[in-house]
Length: 67
Image (tube, rainbow, N blue to C red; front, side, top):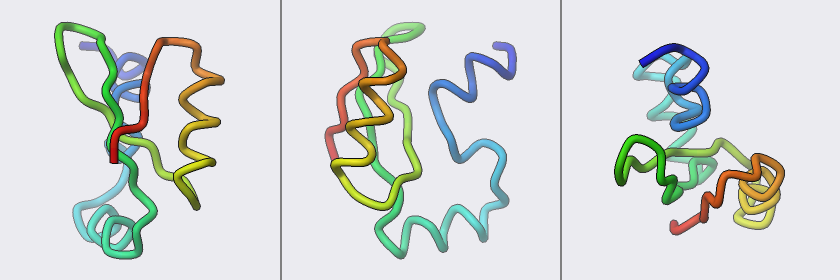
């Protein structure tokens, strides 16, 4: 899988484990249902659920924020 596809699926790929854990602990990481390569889930880093939904809509890939 190339970096472009990974970036679409998971915005945490460029963060260290410690950075990802900090973002997650502060409630800034949103799980999405993204149907690329099967049923792979992705993540979005956003300030709110509404912001995460806005990012998902702009991507135009049918991605839905689920938590």
